[in-house]
Picture 1: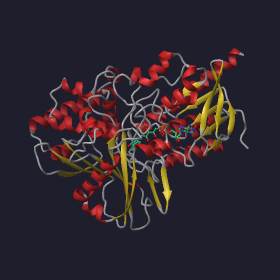
Picture 2 (picture 1 turned 120 degrees about the vertical axis):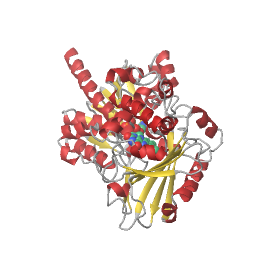
Picture 3 (picture 1 turned 90 degrees about the vertical axis):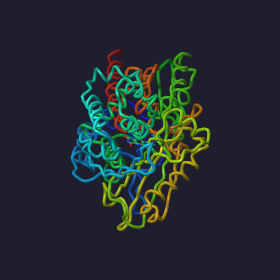
Picture 4 (picture 1 turned 135 degrees about the horizontal axis):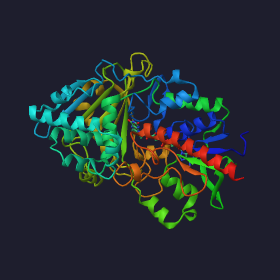
Length: 493
Ligand SMILES: Cc1cc2nc3c(=O)[nH]c(=O)nc-3n(C[C@H](O)[C@H](O)[C@H](O)COP(=O)(O)OP(=O)(O)OC[C@H]3O[C@@H](n4cnc5c(N)ncnc54)[C@H](O)[C@@H]3O)c2cc1C
């Protein structure tokens, strides 16, 4: 039987919640971790079934060197178990890139290694002349060399605006339009330049597209094991129905398995579901509630998993985009209105490249995705799946012909698996709150919510960078805040 009373209760076992719980338990606090699903990991969940081991959604680690998970493993005493399945200086071809210029009919196809500092494969892919090559190098170098202070000044500048102040070659602009979709699930005309340039910097200097044997779930398994080994209580299959609040302070949670008490509750269930549903609007002033309701959720990915009956894929990732297929706000609105474009962008992860045991002998598994709305009720999802399959047949016939089974996912499945939908259009987002101007950097919601003892960990608060990385950073920061809060409380007594 679990205890009824704890120092800290953490809601959610994604990278945000699990890192907070594992660190606080290691530091000697008595913690309860509650997860509504049977399987742990939130959006970075991995499946280990029928001889296959893969992520439910297409994932790549950015940065590969200096990942936020590394110091967590270090502190947990399991540094040797932090083993990325790809080194930033791996000499092999890593990505198969397909790109079609707006003025061409055909796609160019190149193989690219890890060294994003060498733009030669891009120049070949884009088929651009010396002037545009020089312009590209200038802007890439400016991004790579930007200091923290310079980045911070770009929280309220969109990437589109930042590039507009420079003489940006159209091939580079189109690539960054694609990159905003693929790495942040945002449009270039809304994404904060500070966020996108940070991720570009990390990819250039510290490598992108990292993975782990067994998928990202390998990280979850180690952190959860250490949490329990250090005395933490983990209850899965248990939905938190309410965060209990008395006299302006949290007092615990009400769950499908009963009530538990603690002076601190850390929620990684999403800031909007946490404040509006689990706590309830009545506990906050109107201005804060309106602020929370006005926060914009990020976009989602539809995803198809292809199970192949023979090994046909060579590189770790397959990426396909054209000048017409990446989405800015206007193109996105057209899709939402039911007008599916001729082609969509594709971002696909071949788990077998990273892990020889990702599929039974002689087989392979590919996890693909394209951007879409985060609305669990979105009407366009089936048409996007059909478009993804159609492109697979046309451009990757060897993969399509080897396919013996497919699985389809979209924002509804993401929401069911992770966060509740509490405002219209929200629930299925890939990362969390949109990393757009007005809600990034200094304007990102604070992890410390305006109720004593309530903290928000994960993608929605207190951090920046790419999905899993920023959630683990946020979880690490929240662990420190909680300790400080509890120390302050003890002194007051
Ligand atoms: C399609 C897709 C592609 C992605 N690609 C990448 C990528 O390439 N690289 C990258 O770094 N990131 C990627 N991400 C994003 C990354 O997975 C997320 O940013 C990250 O997992 C968010 O972590 P989190 O801890 O904030 O929340 P989550 O992972 O969402 O975890 C929240 C947890 O809380 C639990 N929970 C919610 N409500 C309750 C409740 N009431 N009671 C109990 N438990 C509850 C949920 O079940 C869940 O387990 C992708 C995500 C998706 C969906």
